[in-house]
Length: 253
Image (cartoon, rainbow, N blue to C red; front, top):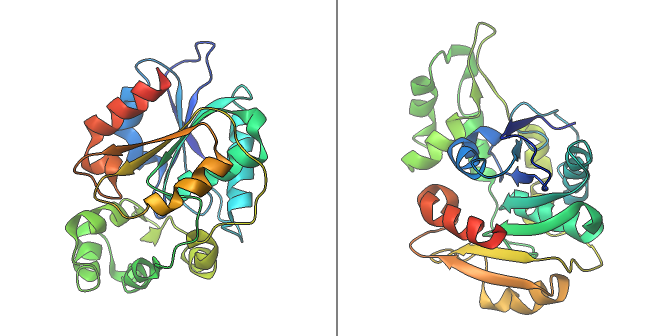
């Protein structure tokens, strides 16, 4: 089963499951998870091949959806699901294939489509770090910088660097993520509809959810509505956390 972090106590209502994006972890959501947990139980998962979850030979969306189903079944059998980017696609596949497990769905800045951009440059950068000589995050940051100029992006990736007496290592299964990158940026063949309440929450500055996607979203999620977080790009929950929180809580009630 996936590793997960729980905040808040069960109160008889479905918990909120948070599924992070590519190269992320449950820990990335710590502050927002605690805020959401003021009124409900919130479970943030480490997706497979991320964080403290098992390293497995596939990163397909049907497999990720089954992972989320297992967590939900172990925590009451029904949940509200919030997924960002890769986690949003996994949440959509879960809702379409196991609608009995999903109460309400929130998809953060991703659409049910295949994209053409690869995220492989981050893997190249992480592989350039000499883990045998790395004892501090600042060491790794200096080695990442020639490949990734964005300070925020490097800080995000470094949250997945494990340091300890056994040496440095990435919590990410880079080999599988690289091999399955076409699946990660793609969209699987999946049938059905999810007729429950659904919110597509996009960054107003992001190009991940476009007007061209509206017809497909409506076909798969007929009760979906779309809202934008002003001033936010793809990392809307990190860039505008208060506005993101307000939109999520406004939808969940």
